[in-house]
Image (cartoon, rainbow, N blue to C red; front, side, top):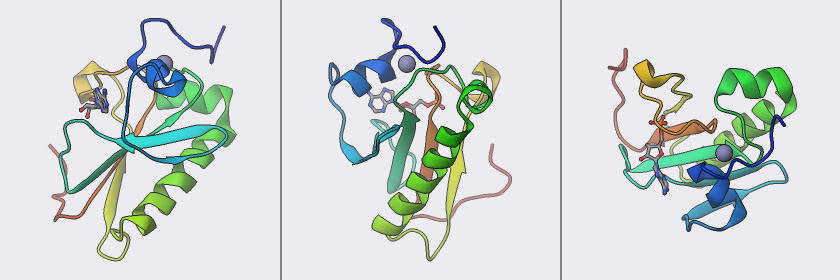
Length: 119
Ligand code: AMP
Ligand code: ZN
């Protein structure tokens, strides 16, 4: 069923506590942890606890959780003090855009200069 944990999903395993993660925030619907291969001084992933393969499928099924993810991203940016200078939030969607984990996740990146447009 949509949103149910998937046995072969790394991020479902993090939600369930079966794979360790450096968790920085948690809410009723979301969990946020540091990326294992950080691309900036602050690089946090905010994910829904429910399993959806990408942002659009999450938005179609549970739009309120998309708002929760963005609210959490803002709080993380404030906690990490990257909000003054500016930070970036990204949902890579599809393998061609660099998505490697097919459980929706928002990258929160900051703490260095960020080029636009991204590669
Ligand atoms: P994406 O390429 O947009 O699908 O992002 C997946 C991200 O998950 C990458 O930036 C990885 O470095 C990160 N990642 C993979 N495994 C883990 C893990 N066990 N804990 C934290 N981050 C991870
Ligand atoms: Zn999952």
